[in-house]
Length: 332
Image 1 (tube, rainbow, N blue to C red):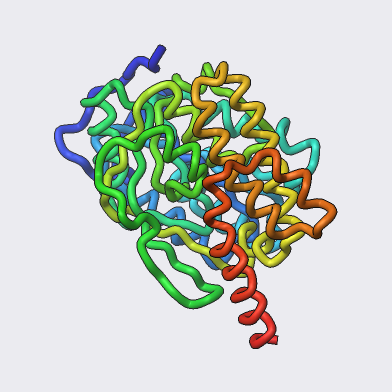
Image 2: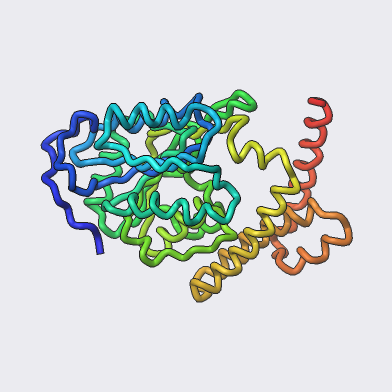
């Protein structure tokens, strides 16, 4: 059941810092911000949210994971300036990879679920379109069969110094669940998605799978997902980001791949094998990568999950592996 609207929409979108709503109303959209050591970027993130022009109330919910830089100080500064727009959860110790994380995140999640829609913007990303939220909420209000809507983004890679569209060769429109299962979380920029809160009541949680992949799958399993082909945000990859740290360590990447295989097998069972064909293909593709990364003795355990058609990709994967080694050796 969707949250009841407790306010009257404005006639025209105005900047959210100029809104005047009753203190006790729930916002239509809650923005989840997850941040850690984002001092160089957190102002861009918050300013991109504060410049949004909407006809409805917006609230920003921040989980700050005990940064060792000035991230928390900057957030407190924004909250003092705009107290009605922010709820901050400042952690006394870093929770990443620890058992306490799930419990620490609970208040952040619960506050985010007070409205009709939830959106995200991690502390090193930011929004560039002041009407991003208005466009997405308008679409979702008019098309109630949709569970989520995401947009395009500009992908900025500060490590290798390039920028490009995050999504290429995809037309605006519905996104089928086959593509969502095959691509997982990389099918959309995290900072671009807006989804209906009430679908979280039937959320299938699989700890072995990344959060981005699980979120978009759950939305596609319960409703329709729409791709709005407009550039509304920046997705950033930089030296201090989680992905950049993992991408340098092949052992860690393979651990994530192994967990993903188990996760997709569990998700297949949880959904009564409704999408088994797509899950098997995804597992096959991950297994093929592990096959190429493993020594001769370990290859045999991945063969059982690899579909015959996937072996056609083997020469490409081997070539790609050798090219990476050559580039690495030249850089060294």
